[in-house]
Length: 383
Length: 125
Image (cartoon, rainbow over all chains, first blue to last red; front, side):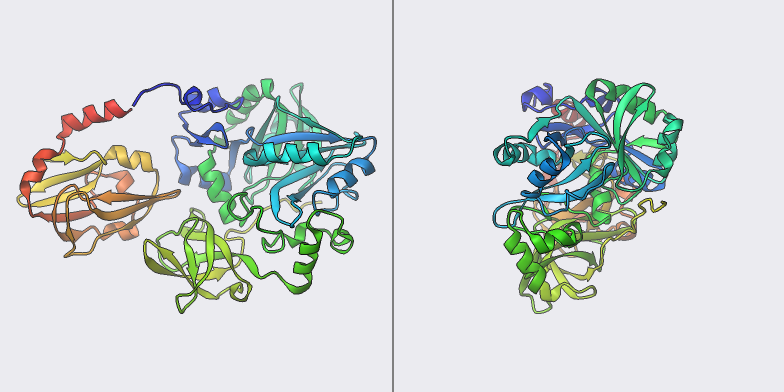
């Protein structure tokens, strides 16, 4: 085996923090066409626990960031509403919403965050998954009306700071920005020592935290500044996955794909009432039918009885051994100190406490359907 | 470890008389990351060299452990059931996985000694 640079050997892209990851001793792996840190020397378990106890810094610059801009908010919001089931028209300035792009059959093309910036009428900012950004941007280019323009922000980095100490750490870096009082799912522009950033109070871990978009050229210095704070450690994609699994959050390509609709995925809460009634988005008929009669299959949490984990793709069986579903994510939850999983089962099995079996290496492991999240969310609820 | 020999899959066997103590190497445990579960063989299992003997699960993935030698399993490290992290902490010692009574002691000669294994690790780095 040669020791050539894996990035060039496999045509992988690098984020603005690549040199920092390597310097920190990260194990780099290919992910969505990027070379990304899966863990640092501390390891996945320690990085996971660190995030829940104090603060973790995540490089998520591989994700897609874009703006859509129209003549006014109504035009941009209505354009986006053709593609997603959330209420964007009534999204207030400085607020962020979670939603999905749906195909004509109501299946999920991607899940994303939409933000309406303060004071920039007609502009909406989007954060989409790295693995789907090409598909998403093609969709937008094809479907946006002539007066609403897509701008891909490929010179922006995205850094997440998550954990109970995240707010106090960030406030220390910008004491006059009143960061600690930012409501959950709010967003605004602010300055860190003269560097402009767009900050939202949101994340993918179940903890309080922030997602910070800033110019790629400023990202390395900003990340190092955060890592200089005692409470902050770098966190890789391995722990990012175990954190979101414990939080019961979906991962595109696992709990979400083009054959799954948001009702089956249990994302009803992200479809505001006005849109449920009015429809007017791709696949609305399927969503409205599922809301009316209930979906045939449902996403569930799963707790295994023993210590062996089950992984993505494991069959789920009923007490008689008949196949009733499939695991879509599975692993070990460090904060719950137990193996956990998510998957889909026929709706009749989707009640918490229902006994099921998971087929692992030819053996059926005992498990129960369990309520999500596995670890309680700790989102900021002040104001 | 006295006289440890290694397979290309990073298992070791340390022979004491006609019994081999089998585990995974320190290199292997570092590659795997935090071990969260070990599926041990049963006492009495008859294994051929290269057959799957155990499974070591880390947070992210399952990894098969192959027996480097043929024989019958005579002991399993049940301490790993409550403390799978022993494999990370002391892969060569307390993290042993199973003991196997060798049915063909000559198989040991085909495995790498410590020096050869270290060279092997350098060659695949």
